[in-house]
Length: 363
Figure 1 (tube, rainbow, N blue to C red):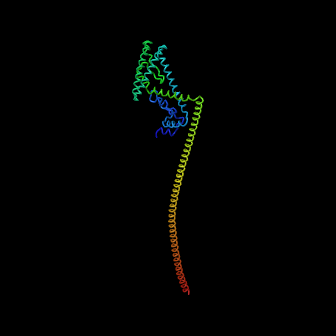
Figure 2 (tube, one colour):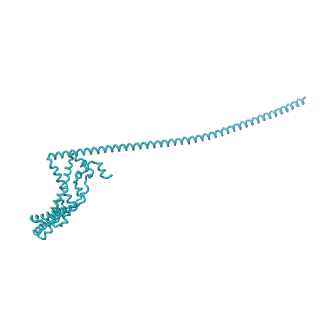
Figure 3 (spheres, rainbow, N blue to C red):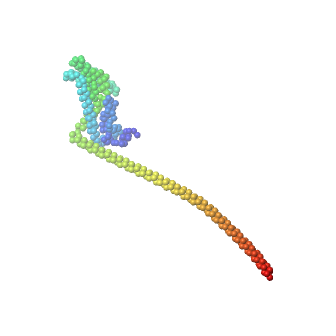
């Protein structure tokens, strides 16, 4: 998209930021572009599409843009005239003073120079357009003016000393404030009066006169009413622009709030997902811990079971050993008691035998 299209979408031709002189095709920034007095880019908006919109709208209603353009051109021409007066004062300070009679003769030479330059520029323009007959007629007039100029120069030369004749050679152009030489040749004069700078100032001054004539047809009261309407229209446009800016700021704040809410939602979702992940990781770690504890308990239970079985087996073995030992002891006691009984019986028998033998001996 081009810059003009972007500007057209952004503003209307009624906006205060748009150059009203540009809409009327008389902005000095456009007319003097590329000349010695190029003013650079205008501080206000220039767009040919906006000019077309204005031309269409101006046929239906009065927009009072002529007053804005007239104010602009008046301030510009006033500044140009001020520079012209300063240049004249500077020349008066640097050049020797001459009498009023000699000054009038020099002024006459300058006027004839200007006439020659203007006629030559016009003849060149007609020749470029193909109007050769009119161009030849103007060149014949140029020859007549040259003859008058030669006579005026002779009078001027004879009225001043030879030492001062070359010093009084500059003059300030009343139209464009450029310096002109009293003894400039025809080519130099034609280039100046047919140049873009001089013709641009002529166009600006003619446009200003035209705007003044248009506004002079109305009475002072009508002009005051136009100015009042213009001021009201300007105030209304400013309020509309401020309202649009406020709406834009509101929409921007809404968009910012919407973006902030979205970012908050995203942060919340991320935090929720992060918390879920943390909970999952904690649950997984707890599961792993429970699984480890369960395995450790199962291992300890199995170890305890094996140890208990070993203990039971050892207890059973010790009890068997004890019972076997007790049985052996019982057998030993029984055997001992039986042996003792046998011994006692043998002893009793022996005693009874001995007693019997004693009794028998006694008998």
